Length: 376
Length: 132
Image (cartoon, rainbow over all chains, first blue to last red; front, top):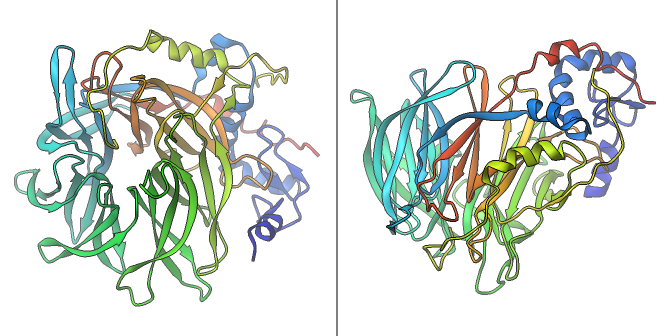
C-alpha cells in the first residue's frame, strides 16, 4: 500500500474508538484529534487532556508575563559537565542513575584537552528539583555518546571515544557499588552507540564515523565480541526500530544517520538496514535523503513508528530543516515516509516569553573553536 | 479558562541551527509526548549560544495536521543532545552543552523539569468542546 493510500485511510480516525473515516468533530482546543461524536470525545478526554493542554499552549497568543510563568519546562538543576555529548538514565536496584559523556575540557586561559573524565551520578528528586551525587568518573578521550545495557541482571555502560581510537565498556560491580572497566574495543571516530537486542542477543552498536561503518559487538559470556561490521558511509549515529511484517511478525531495523561522505558531500542518503531472516546479519533495506544528518532518533507510540533525522549542515549553512518520518506499510515493502520538516518557524505563540528565557545568553558571540577539523 | 486570541503577533524566525541530535520523550504519566531538538550552532563561525527547541509531539495527528508543534525554546550552549527521563513521577529533560563561545567546554549542562500545573484539573470539563 502506498504512503498516500495509508494516509488517506488514516484520515479522521477517531482518537477514542479508532473507527476509520467516521470522525466528524475534533477537539475545539488543540484542534489536533478527531472523534466520531461527543461521547467518544468525552470518554477520550482523560487520556487526551494533558497532551491537549500542551498543544493548546503552543497555539495560544496571550500576555507575555503570564506566558513566562507558564512555560512548560523550567530549570531544575545544573551539572558541571565538560563538553557534554550525551546523557543516559538507568536504574540499578531501585536507584536512579545518570551518566554523562564529556567530549573535552577547556576553559579560558587553559589549553583544551580531549582527554577528560566522563561521570556517573545517582539522581534523586524532591518532586521538582533534581539532586545529583557523583558516584565515579572514568577516563575518556572525546567521549561522544553513552548507552546503558542490562543483560542477565548485569549492567553495562558503553562510551565511544571520538578521538581515542576505542570505546570503553564498563560493568557494574554490585559489591563495590560502582562501575569497573570491562574492556575496550576498537572504535575509530566513535560518534554514537546504541544498545540493542538482536534476536535475543544483547549487543552494542557503535557508529565509527572515520571508517564509515556500524560495528556491532555481541555479549558472549563475559565479553563483547565483534559480530558484524556494516558498511554505512558517514555513519555518526545509530538507532533501532521494530516494524510489523507481512506475516504478522516484527522486523528489527537499524537506522544509520549519514553525516558527510566523500562521495556525496553533505547531501547524504542515510541507510536503513534490516536483520535478515536467519538473524545472522543486517542487510541494506532502503534509504532516506538527509543533509548532514548528525543523529537519528526513533519512537514507537500508539502502534506507529517514527524516526527523526537531525540535519546539521551542508557546505554553506547550519540552518537546515530536520525531518520527521513515519514507517508506512508492512516489511519488506514498507518504507519511511516523510511526515513533517521542521526548521524555520513562526512563533505564533509565546514569543515574548521565549525571548525572556533567551535573555540570559543574549550577549555577543566571540571566541575560538579549539578543534579545526572533524565531526563532533 | 484562558482566552484564546487569534490575532498574530510579530514573530521572529527560529531556525533549526546545526541540529545535532533529538530526543523523543514522554511525560511521566505517559500522556504527553515531546521532541527536543539540540541546536549546536555554527562551528565555523564559533557561535554556540543558540536556543534549542521542544516540540509537542502528537502521534495521533491526522494527515494535513502537523505532528510537531513548537512549544518552547530553551537556552543552550553548543547543544549536542537531549535526554528525557522520569524519576519519582517527575519528568526531566537534560541537555548536553558542549561549549560556549568564550568559556570553552566546562560550561555545565542544564536539566529542566516539566511543570505540573493545577490548571490541568480545572480544565478537565472544559476540554470537551465540539468544533463541528
